[in-house]
Length: 155
Image (cartoon, rainbow, N blue to C red; front, side):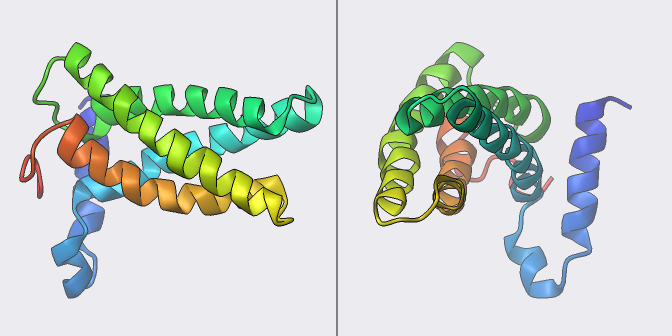
């Protein structure tokens, strides 16, 4: 069995044992997104800390480099493991870049810098932005980047 099939079956199995109300609203792709993006978010935070604290880059540049690395990894892993793409990869990349640009400007930089500006350390500020980002990006990836509403909702 291929890694993709094992990943999807595991997500479906976990979704299948959730309590009734959760089972009706939590799609296996949401669980898969959580695993993939939780991992890539960890890469983002680790790289951000190395760049800002280790390399002494300005916060905006550290956020940008770490985020660009994580979003590229997220696209590849979500396309491979989690979502059934309906469009060729070239079209998806273009749409994904547009979604990421909106997310980056509005949520990643906006929330991170706003919280850092009021005195929140940059790591917790980035974590808070990550929570907002997760909700936005899941919806965008599920319904805009990798398919239309209803595509692979309960497999």
